[in-house]
Length: 278
Ligand SMILES: [Zn+2]
Ligand SMILES: [Zn+2]
Image (cartoon, rainbow, N blue to C red; front, side, top):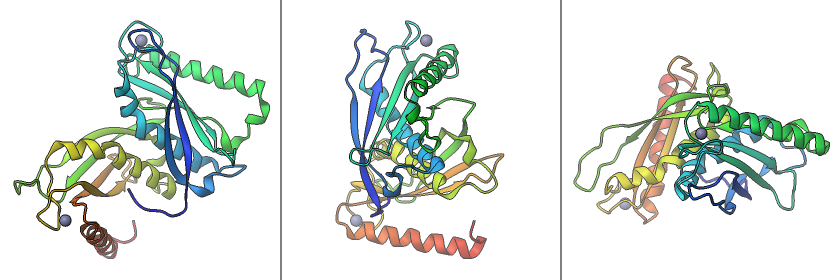
């Protein structure tokens, strides 16, 4: 969503270890993703790396779910979600990648999910015994899931579209319940991890919001072909954490997008003057 020159493309590879309902395994799904360039190094910093891995899993979770009718890895039912186990290979400087092992699960927070997390934990421990070199702490594989109550917490992700649809009507706020890593919900959320999660939330729902209406550009009469996001985290409100994403429809011309970015920059600096640098 935001442009940052200091990124480097990596390969993000999803291996779904369970089958679809017909019993077939899917091949790997591979995406090219820009990530902050400084994470590609012999010893990537742990917190930032984990946040990036979690954001990658979150970003592609729905898309992978839609690719097939997946079966639960542990029973005969349909999978309704997946447990992810992204492994970091960012220390491989000539071919940095993240390999996300995923398992379909039939029920959020159910027995098959618990078993799935145990499966990954045992697999990772066996791998570390077999390849002790892999176990440098900063580049540890982490287990993330969309629905764990151990490492994640639900928040409200609220989208306010500030521009109208093509008929000139404003749309009420759109609210999603999303789970994010629990450790960034605290009185002073870590800046980098928060930014990564905020960007991942915007990316995750971008296409869906675009499809909800025929949106108009905020700055001219044309139809919007994309949207600018300005997600604001209220993750320091530990009792009621939320993310408020201000969104503007933009046309393809380029000028309205530039004006939109300026609009958000002015809004943010005004807010900071009024409420302090929070
Ligand atoms: Zn199951
Ligand atoms: Zn426009």
